[in-house]
Image (cartoon, rainbow, N blue to C red; front, side, top):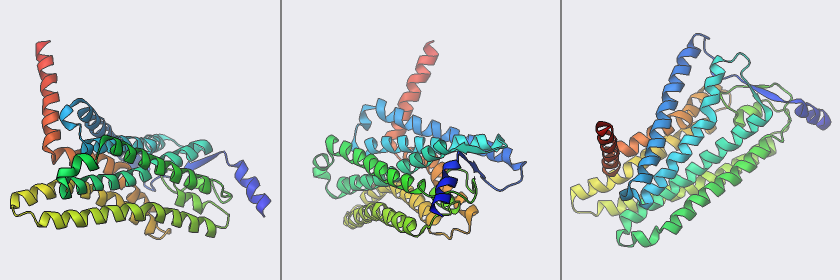
Length: 316
């Protein structure tokens, strides 16, 4: 039996991404929707990185983390969306075995990295509000770089483990992945291997990744709320809460989608696809809007850049 599974797995050279089970005439509408949202993702996240790198006033830990968040969002969506748009027009909807491995590895890398980065951003907000006099000490440039590097390292280790576990399974049921990208749960449905050990290790790995980040975020905000409530001025409390609301919104959307995606029963694949849209399209699109529209420094930096461009255009 093991030899047959190994043989069948070695014969798999590609997979078929089923995508959304809708009428063919709706594929054009979905393509245009994906194209519009992806264009907004590119414009918003590249714009955010340019603003942060070009304006010296934004050379602070908070914007350093925000620039890295934009980088992660940009590449996380770029791993998934272009291939999904191509498949709206493709009859075969195929993806090579190596392409599927690469897509799963990169997606897992960026999504786990984002979780750790959001925890680092929660620590940054905790330090800024609860220990403002020691903020520059507790969030030095070196520490911020170490937190970002550590987030990427944890994402890489997790991705290597998750990808290697998934693609050591024997795929002998079908080549059709009932999703619009290569993900662990749809690939598990194609396997004829015993998934008990795989699921236990995968669940344990998810717990090791998710629990520490959630604990850091929850504890940080418990201290933040406690500190803010002691501020006598209503305007001061409003300003402090406003500095955290954008981050809380991003955390809520990302973790809400992830929990919904991986805790719902596996017999509802269409719900999983909809939940996946939250962290492949919606979150990367909304993050730059949330942080720019609610942030005075970013809006002023954007006005400055646009003003310089208009002046240069008029002078020409």
